Length: 303
Length: 146
Image (cartoon, rainbow over the protein chains, first blue to last red):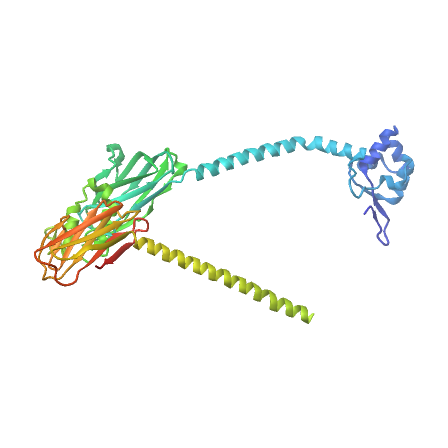
């Protein structure tokens, strides 16, 4: 729509500012000439020419067309842009010249963001690292029990990692596997710096010395290449309770059943050198039951 | 309007319901098949049979399939009237009427257990094999009869 007929108001039309400017310049006319012919100011002419489709009075439009020597229709806004038109080519090219630095900037920013996003995505997805802790349900004060952390890394190749384990208060580490030096054992913390092939098992033998808390909490993390941004928590068991049952007697029925001995062998065979005293567990399993004697700190095994 | 409404309300939901029911039924059958197949596979990791179950010697043969359970418990029940002279491999525990073995680091293949009795076998015998499924970690118990 290029003409607005509002009842009781003057008729307005939409003209093409670019066409007006081009026609004026082609004919060597000045803005002052057109302003005089149409009976408006030069500022108005300038505003019409610089706006893409200015709304002007129809009467002024007729005067403008007459001054430029063209029919009014030629000045009106084109409903669809004519690509072949020299006017449009000119205006598009001018606009493109104006916006190309912005376009270039936008493309550059998008490329940087895309690269960064891709890097982040690849960085996070290319580290299929998981660490899972396995704790017995319960243990006896002063009696050693194993803690096993199974780490799974990249399916192919080796993964260098740092595994940190924070131990509860009033505990003593008896042995770690793989072994760690003094620097790796500080303030109730174990720190392994190790390379694994696909997966690795990290374990330690621990005793709880005091019975201040019934339940003791474990916390730990795993990271690749000392990169704190890739720090992952160790999942799995986090809690162990103190009681009067052997750690291998998971259901606390004072019997080590076939299922329980098989679980011990299946789960802890790899870390027997930790000093699990498997012989004692087997002895309890072969018996008909056991009892923990707190006074003598020993197991009474029933035949 | 009325016929169109009847067509739209009667035809489409019924057709969709039938299709959904069919898909759900097929899915149920497929899942049931998968579950049973999984259980069957898990239970069939170790199969056993008595090579001899009479006379003075009892031989039990176990076939361990892949993936082999790492550890295995075998229990042999026999009448307390039978006096056991020896077993091969050596049993972990021998009580009246029950012999128990624990095998560690088992591998795929055949495992043979023999029991030598003082006198020909009296009464019935049966065996039990217990292990943990290496994939699921489930405790599995299977019985062996002559």
